[in-house]
Length: 318
Image (cartoon, one colour):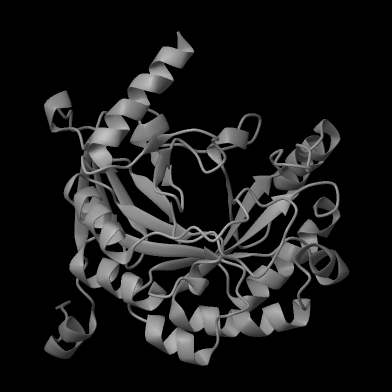
C-alpha cells in the first residue's frame, strides 16, 4: 500500500497559493518555490479581474556606490519612506499583485532594507525579490535576510576584465559573494547586453550555473544619458547565442526587447500595466523603469495613480 508517514507529512512544506484573476484565467502562484499554475479553461468575468499589476518594482533609493554608465537611475540621494512603502505593499497585495521587486540604486544601501523585506514576507502574501550588485551581501546580511526573500537577481555584466571595467569592482569578490546570496534564496544573474558583454555570455552563463544560479536574465542595453542603445549587430549576435544555448539556466528577456526571440508567454492577454509597473525613488509610478514621466503617488494610493497612468498612456497612443 502506498502512503506517506506522519513524519514525511510534517517534513513536507505546505504550499501557500496566492490567486490572481485576469483575462488569462485563474493564476495560482506559490512564492516559496516560484511555481505558477494557470487555469486558463476557467473564464473570469471582467469585474473580478485583479486591478493591480502582476509584478511591481520599487526603487527604494537612488543611492549606489557604483557608477555604471548604462544605469538608468538618477544620480541623486532620493529615498522612499518606510511607512509609505508598506502602505503601498498592503494595497498591492490586497488587489492581486503577486510579486514585489526592490531595486534602486542599490537596495541593500536602504537603511531599513532588512526590516522592509521582513515586513513584506511576513505581513503580506507577496513574493519578495531584489536586484543587487551583490558586493554588500556578506554572511551577516544573508542570515538576517534568510526567510524573508524569495528570489534575488545579481547583476553580472561580463566576466573578469570586462566586468571590472564596467563595475569597477573585483570579479573574484563577486563570485565569493554569490555563496552568501545562495544562502538566502534562489537567485538568478542579470546581464546588460552590449558590444562589450556579448562575447562574454558563454562565460557568464558558466560562472552563474557553477555558482548555483537558476536563471539568466538578458537585458539588451537601453539608451540612457551618454550610452547608446545596443546596435543591430549585437542584437543579431544575441539571438544566435540564445538559439545555440543548451545549458541548465532558464533564459529570460525583458518584454520590451523580446521581439524576434523564442519566448513563451502564457499570459499574453495580460500586458502593459496589467503585467508590470515601476515606482521610482521619488514616488513616481511609471510603466517601466526607463520611462521619463509618470504619475506621482499621492494620498489616493497606487490604484488611483494606475488608473491615471493608464488613461494618459491610452491618450498618447491615439
